Length: 371
Ligand SMILES: *Cc1c(COP(=O)(O)O)cnc(C)c1O
Image (tube, rainbow, N blue to C red; front, side, top):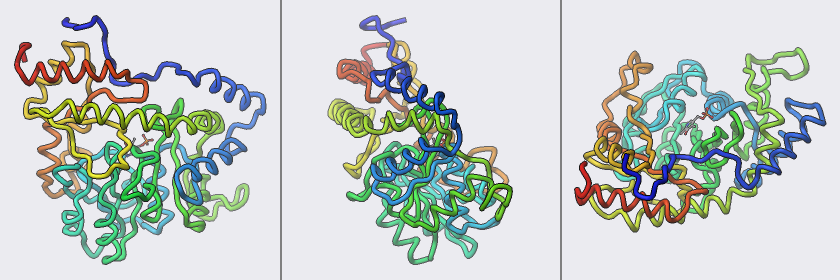
C-alpha cells in the first residue's frame, strides 16, 4: 500500500456530523409525539422543501424512484405509453418508468455534459411517446430549454429527475420547476440525504400535487375508500424530521461542493478530463472525470488510498433488465461508461484532501508511479 500521507480517503463520509445533536433532538421529538406516518413533520418538511426549491408544492414519498413513478402517473402517463429517458443515468430512472406501467425508451446523451441530448430525444419519439424524463446528472441540469422545445412541439409531459440536483438551477430556473414536476431522492448519499430512504415530488401544479398525495397513500380518498389503485409510498415522520434539520445546511454545503469542483477543474487540465460544466447552477452531487485508461487510473488512486466509484459502468441500453425492449444503440453513453470515474467530492472534504487527489492524478499522468 502506498499512502502518501498515511491517510485513506473514502469516497463519502456519512459519519455523524456537526448536526448530530440536532438530529437526535428531532428523533426524540418524533418518538415523544408517537406519530410516525403522515404527520406534522412531513407536512412541515414538504412546505420547507417546496419553499427552498422554488415551487408551490412538495409531496413526500418513500424514495426517488417512487417520486418519478408517481409524478409520471399523476401527470397522465398510462400503462403502455413510451417514456424517453437518457441512456446514462442510474437504472432507477428507467425502473421508475416501468413501475408506472410505461415503457422506457433510451436516448443518447450529449458528449460534453452526458445529459439527455435533445436531438437524440426528438429522434426517439414515436406515436406512443407520452413523456420525457430528463436527468440532471451529477448535479447539472439537462439542457431544459431545448428539451422543453421538443416536448412542447410534440405535446409531451416532462418529469425532471432531480435526484442528484437539489437546489440546482438551469439558466437560473430551479430544477424541478421547468417541467410538469421534479422528482427528488433523499437517499443518504444524495446532496440532501436522510438516515434511510426518502423522496419528494416538486410541482407548482396543485392538481398534480393532489394526485401524487392520493397515489402515495394507496389511492384513498377517505379511510378505506380507494378511488384509484395507488401504492404505499409515504415519507415517514422520522426521516422528515431529520431532513428538516439538514435542509438549512444545504446552501452552504452546496457552496463547498462548488468550491471543491472549481479546484478540481483548475488542477485537472491533462489527459484526465472532468465532465464539462455547461451551467453554473450545477450542484456537484458527483465529480466524474474521464480517462481512456480508467481501470489503471482507478487502481493507481486506490493504491494511494483514494476511493473512487463509477457512475455508471453500464449504460441503460446495455442493462440485462431492459434487453427485451431492444433499445437503440447509444454510442456516446457507451463510450462514457468505459471512461468515467467519480472522484471524492462532498461538503466535508478538506481542501488538502482534494489537493492530494489532484496530485495523485497528476502523478498518474506523468507516469511517475507504476500505472
Ligand atoms: C438516486 C437516484 C434515483 C433513485 O432514487 P432512490 O431514492 O434511490 O429511489 C433516481 N435517479 C437518479 C438519477 C438517482 O441518482
